[in-house]
Length: 257
Image 1 (cartoon, rainbow, N blue to C red):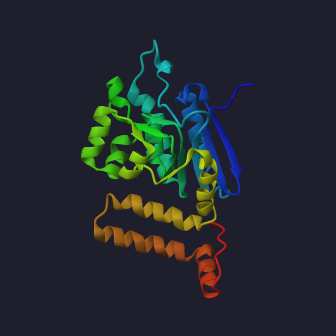
Image 2: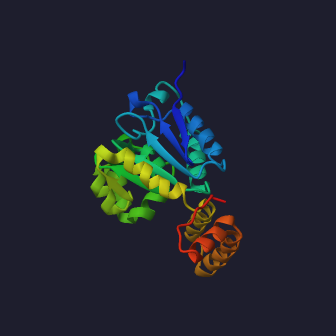
Image 3: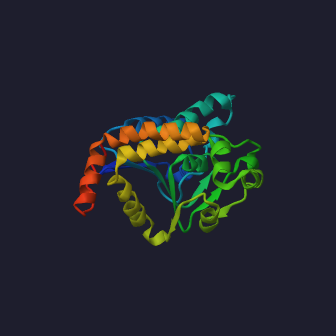
């Protein structure tokens, strides 16, 4: 029986997508990209309220599997269309996407993590851009996402040197949001993700839109877009529930609608 390169598990509104090529540190192949793109498309389902992207085995992802291209003439720009489709789907999904990072996240594997809304790291996690080691430029959104997290100069340094960062160094730079001890990492990821899975999913998706648009807007445009989104959020059942819970002095029970 052929093993899937992406393993899916959906429980209590949390869809976990696990990169499943542990023998290669989850190196990315065309097949994996196609399966991940399909899984992210299916994550639009209303039963999914939060997505976790994780890696099987000893690490998150070692980047593109270079063995896939041995002896082949390929156009990288064409191959990158598969990567770009995934990065855009993550950024456009109207719900939180969390990267659960343990072991190594390198090259396109780091790009995949950067595209997520939240990055949680185990204390043993390490990070490297990796591209300069094989004389390539950062791709899969890294040139866009990394400088927005760490600034232009630090992003250039990390790409030019391909130096390896520890989890704590990544935390200090703002590349990851939280670091948890490796011995309790899986439990902490589930607990953290549950907060989002039980949250006002529609409002979080609208907020995600607002943040992304803000990078390309002036203040007037951002204010106008906020007002448009607020009208949508205010018409949701979750907003009504939030108001009722506030008045009744109890925690809200959101449905994600």
